[in-house]
Length: 374
Ligand SMILES: C[S@@+](CC[C@H](N)C(=O)[O-])C[C@H]1O[C@@H](n2cnc3c(N)ncnc32)[C@H](O)[C@@H]1O
Image (spheres, rainbow, N blue to C red):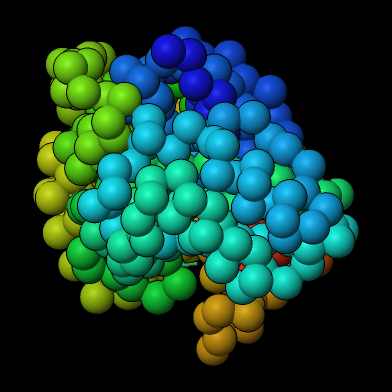
């Protein structure tokens, strides 16, 4: 049974997510907020386990329909093929958004969807708890009304896909794992050349880099709600044996930060992710950053103001730029930052590749090849 799926991501990251899907052999069409693709259940399970930059994967329940009144909504929603995804005992949680529609009150729409479920199953649905970040016991159902058109989807991921399970220790202003992966995927890094993150914090970029280089699925072992769907009965949805590519034998990723607590967190997280053998950790300031032999990539996320205060950020960016020009000539740089004026302080001539949202802060990825002359 081919299903219509939608891998979601924060606005701005759709092109990276489309590349991410393509790496799994799935073709998708970017739409605002994600990428739409078609797949059988095993492919949807594979996307959940293998996508590095998606927030979650939703599966559309039936076809979208027009609902300009509550009567129309209940009548049409009751005809959706709910039984493929739920039983009468499945606890559910609803998330409703309404945009430019006659039915604009999301709580009232949620009430009518519950009424539609009661009509469909002949019994009131059991309501449960679902947390966007952590998941929960309930099956999340997402209802979107857009220009009077109602689309109902079921969530196949559970906890947000950035929750890989390794980052139990955090430092200040950690980057979402999915965003770190999107940076790496679009940086052009080949997974073989040396990679340095001189502002590594809790180690998210170096760890995601090592997972990418070793070909490991980032969510290989997470529980997926889709295995409980009635339509999954009898289908083998166990994880495929991970394809491990062979990264270099020696550590080829450097993680450094001036903060001792951050370095402790980075080491512990890398250990938990099973990738510490590829990463060298140093506690020092960016002024002491040094390249590895060869030509590689600096992929990093320096402090950017709103979330970290303290030192003079303009001086810090100027120093960072000077260090790269002195010691990393010929390397490529991919720097995530919230402020173009700070990036100009580096005098590296980096240009914005894409912009998106990181926890409510607008950020851009600036890229370029480091030239000693700036
Ligand atoms: C935005 S955070 C990086 C977050 C990281 N990507 C993560 O996921 O946890 C910036 C980091 O820069 C570090 N930092 C600030 N000034 C520094 C300096 N002069 N040299 C090295 N690290 C510095 C901070 O300790 C902080 O961990």
